[in-house]
Length: 132
Image 1: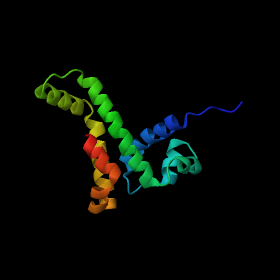
Image 2: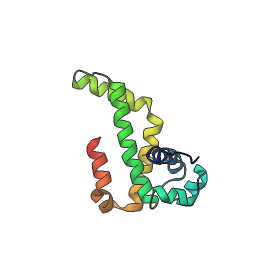
Image 3: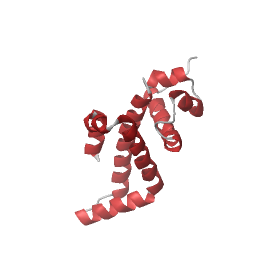
Image 4: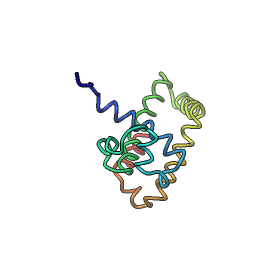
């Protein structure tokens, strides 16, 4: 009997696992082959889900944005006013400081590789920044 795979869930797992690899090696230094090897999948499998490294990275940005917002909202609870929301946000960032540091450094690396105009005009980046 064939194995039933939830392709969307598997794609998200590949994305989230790739974050640490990007953070360790940097966007510029890692290849799709490196990512596939470290994730224990074939390069064909990786290319089935992501057309190239940039597509993988941008999908990672989208997924992390979605997850970050959901996690923050779950943790913030029913903050009643601006002061409570700011306090909740600062606590959330402090609690996840290592993650956000990695995310920022990786974002800078991507920025250096792509250039200012590409970043400013990229719809995925614009959408993520707007959601934050």
